[in-house]
Amino acid sequence: MSIVAGVDFGTLSVRVTLADSKKGSLGTCVAEYPLERRRSDPDLATQSHVDHMEALVLAMHRVIDECGVDSKEIRAIAVDTTGSSVLPVDKNMQPLGDYYLWCDHRAKAEAEEITAMAHDMHIEAIEWCGGTYSHEWGFAKLLHWMRHNPDQRERFGTAVEHCDMAAAVLTGVTDTARMVRSVCAMGHKWMWNPKWGGLPSQAFLSRVDPLFDGVREKIGGTYQTSASIAGGLSTYWGERLGLTSGIPVPTGAFDAHWDAIGAGCRLGDVVNVIGTSTCIIAVSERVKLIPGVCGVVPGSAHPDLVGVEAGLSATGDLFDAIARRAGTTVSRLAEGLESIEGGKTGLMRLPWDNGDRTVLVRSDLGGMTLGWHLGHTAQDELYAAIEGTAFHTRVVLERMEQHGVPVNRVINGGGIPQRNDILNQIYANVIGKPILVPDGIPTGLGSGIFAALAAKDHGSIESAQAAMCVGYRKFEPDPSTRGRYETLYQLFKQVYMGFGTSSLADFSQVLGDIKRIAAGESIRSEFGHRAARKVALL
Ligand SMILES: Nc1ncnc2c1ncn2[C@@H]1O[C@H](COP(=O)(O)OP(=O)(O)O)[C@@H](O)[C@H]1O
Ligand SMILES: O=C(CO)[C@@H](O)[C@@H](O)COP(=O)(O)O
Image 1 (cartoon, protein in one colour):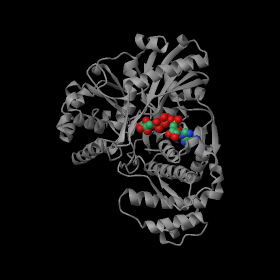
Image 2 (cartoon, helix red, strand yellow; image 1 turned 120 degrees about the horizontal axis):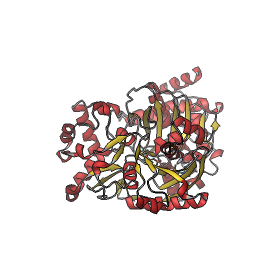
Image 3 (cartoon, helix red, strand yellow; image 1 turned 135 degrees about the horizontal axis):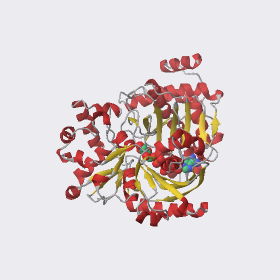
Image 4 (cartoon, rainbow, N blue to C red; image 1 turned 60 degrees about the horizontal axis):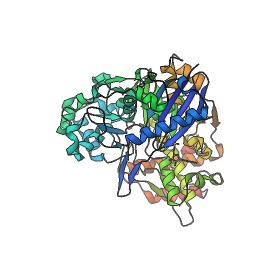
């Protein structure tokens, strides 16, 4: 056995997990960093590279102390980070500003231009990333940066995803041409695939905007899956972290992908990684393209399988906003949620407060709550928001299933399912399948698993998962809510598609139906009849 370190950079904090590669987690410590947001520009969300690295040092020293291990015994360190968190750097890998974090949505216009040009030029990559290039993704952010930082353009060396920057820094890479890039990051968010020779052609990029001239070559380096090593830990970072220099650092990946592996994801599973946002990760043997998802990428989550990613742009962030507006915290507002009956708040919450990541891929949508009356409370809204994220998740799961992704087991990974059992039960009731929840914190364990592979303690992901993952708690769907949730889900889908595709549905009818369902009445509208008949057939 050996001890390894798994690092997980989330939206608000970094978690460092020390793990015994034969037994699993020994302990986790967290350190926070600021996220710059402005009320005057809600699309802006930035973070500093220095803040990230300071927090990493803090969390590493804390966990070494807390676990009481000899830090020199740690034999590998692996790092995952949020995805679509993009930093322009100079030729020596020095930041030319702050990260555009994944939830930075300033690059809407750029994303639309890229999507339009990709369809115009019949670029195959656009089909592999769900048919729409998202405002969250790399090229859109890079173009936004280039347009808004004319004085910095001369110094531009390359743009890096956070996971690749972390690996480069830790391994002492200071030359952009020598950096290692993650297939997971570049495949899902930068249209990279060996099938068409890597990134999309320079001709395409230049036609999007001449500012992109020469950019393809600059986004160079070696592209690898996380089964390959990025390099050895540098002397400088070995000293700062208290670790032995030279220990292997595997090629990084996105938090959600490794969280899925840490939650025990195997063929046939879908993992909802529920945190600030939700990433829905599946692994598949076969490749089938799926409209509206964040990409189908061979080797992304699991080096030997095809990874599929989809998700919701606000989950914990949305719960947080509801609590903040009520002058409290989510955990306090969540106390007593169990007294509310599922599907009976009379509210329907569309969780679009940060736009729609999948399957509509629209940054312009805003959150909506239908059905308010004067007696409703913030807690009702929180309950309806949890239901809304579950309905939206079911829309995504159905899309995946329709395109050949098996959804045999549904696992709720990420931080929130560890703190909120009502949410897990609502997901089981809405999705209509048992929900498995890791019985112990799974975040950070995924990076522990990749560190254990890098240390050569395991020859496969499966063997590392068998040794290191925790068991599951199981939430079975409650039959007494089944009919109500089935009917509400059909309504939700109508509102989601109706509003989301801008062909406005008859909302007064939908509103009335929500109220009748809450009152336990049967639905008389034409749509309601169809939904009720469907429920009766189940
Ligand atoms: N009891 C709770 N119920 C639901 N959400 C919660 C609860 N406590 C905290 N949260 C949310 O959890 C989110 C953080 O999720 P977590 O998985 O820990 O981190 P990250 O998304 O950064 O990886 C925050 O947005 C917060 O609002
Ligand atoms: O966008 C991605 C991955 O593609 C995520 O990293 C992003 O949603 C952030 O996830 P968290 O909710 O902070 O774990």
